[in-house]
Length: 475
Length: 95
Image 1 (cartoon, chains in turn brown, orange):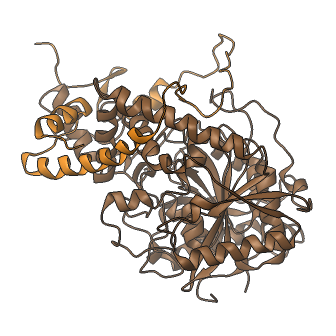
Image 2 (image 1 turned 180 degrees about the horizontal axis):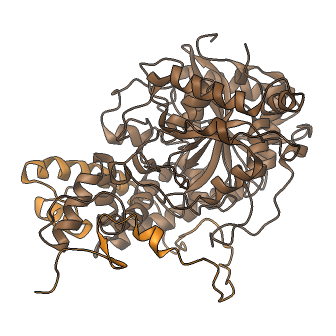
Image 3 (image 1 turned 180 degrees about the vertical axis):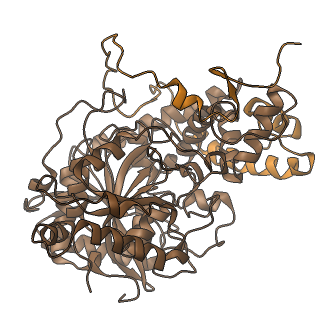
């Protein structure tokens, strides 16, 4: 049976066909039944008791969902999938947590992820890897792998995620669901554990563009506690869904279909693009001439910012502390060396290197200049097109342990990192299957044009049913 | 770009991470690999391009100089592995 949309569940709740308590209880039961997926780090057994009677208010009232374990939750441990924060219980809620709680939506727990959001496979979690519900021998993608698996398996209607280089879109693609990375600054980062502050974006993974629109409406908006959050009007995302796509111009990025893109992925993406044509859109071939710089620039800038952000984990104020430190430096060094996993340490070392005296200009500053060129490519492209399209990821979900080389793993982010460098909103939409596994289509829009992405996604999902397929039922 | 063991040791020290002698070769190779990727940037003509530190050119806003957060020192101090009398405790620094 096709999963019910947020709007359908909201109707059921208001017609008293089901109660919020029942929905939460069922969601927790499903999470337990799917425990082999390892999608959750912490389940909140009390969630059902917090689900109250639905008055009117938000459409999200009473809808069960989950938070990526990177958002601080008052009184519920928040680990970032790291030994460093294994026992960290924040005394406050992130703004995103606060805003979703205010709608009456019911969080049933915290989802698994790559440690500190560093990874593309969810294999870098201190709490173990997550399985892809479509094929448990494969990864769900990362870093929001637990959120993607929880939505794809039908445990929750939606889950929050964060996207620094593709961490919402790539797992959404691998798990056959819809994932939106909003514009940088559209969603508050307050209480969202920092990885790379000029790239990090909070967003969501859900079954459909329509569901994403409801969730973004609740999450978006200015927050005085985050100086980088944009003080700009929040559009009516839901109202914009029904706009016709007639006359819209979609730029198809030739470089995004380059070497490394599986044939089955390219075929499925082209077929979905053809659907857009049927809906009245015009496809235009475009080139982003500096696309090849995105991965090198990202893997300098993101580790540089990470090395600075993660300096706060020193074993003094919170988090893991080593046994019997002999000196302050020993306390710092052993707490960090024992508290962080392999990939996190690797990125801290890379970041420290590129920021160190003698290398700053050659790497960090040069990457920032390349970042400008990448962003300018988009500015130029959006002079003649409304949206930019390509495959979200070059491949379908790969097997556990298949990409043991970290450089091969980094290369898998080739189509997603540019949107983060440029700060643009982007969405991954289910676009069919290749070898029985979901394929994602990525659309990128100009800054703060989330409504255009959601509108296009919604229209595509009116004429295709890929977003309704469930693991085990089809392909 | 390949890096030698001394450089790995220096960077690890700066990052306050320990790298055992047995791991040195491996870590040097891994970092070298990432830097080789970063060396792709050398091919780009970036002369005269303004560095971009942040996605949007929005000016940072100033907030009124007023107290907005309550004093929750006890709640935050309670997270510390070791604290006493309102202070974080660390190993002795001054002999």
